[in-house]
Image (cartoon, rainbow, N blue to C red; front, side):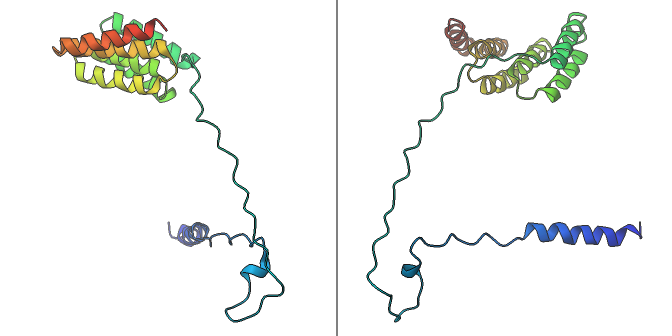
Length: 179
């Protein structure tokens, strides 16, 4: 440990220096005569005003194109394995398998929906609802995934006795399924 101490100190000093770099210098003015000089000094000749050209108008905000989500090969294999585990009654192992799939594809709403379905099977409706809402947030541009997320939310609300909320979620799912 003692021979490494000087190397660690040198490393810390080098990385610390990289963090505290001076900011870049401001760009030079277009008309150097107008910006230079001190108060009371004469400027040579008449000054012409600098013309400022307006920036081009910014394009409209890009729209989110429809983006159907698919499972990659590894996540697909894990979801298939989780289905087999859940069908065999081992929902705890199915959930663990789906959590592995989430580590591979954390932004894929389809995996969140699958895990929410397992949580609902485990009688954990609150977690299923949260996972449905997470999937809904990730599923922008994919009406089918959004519809599945709303169905999961509806089932979780129904499991907690919120039938009016479940009916509303079902309506949302149905309206997305027709798109």
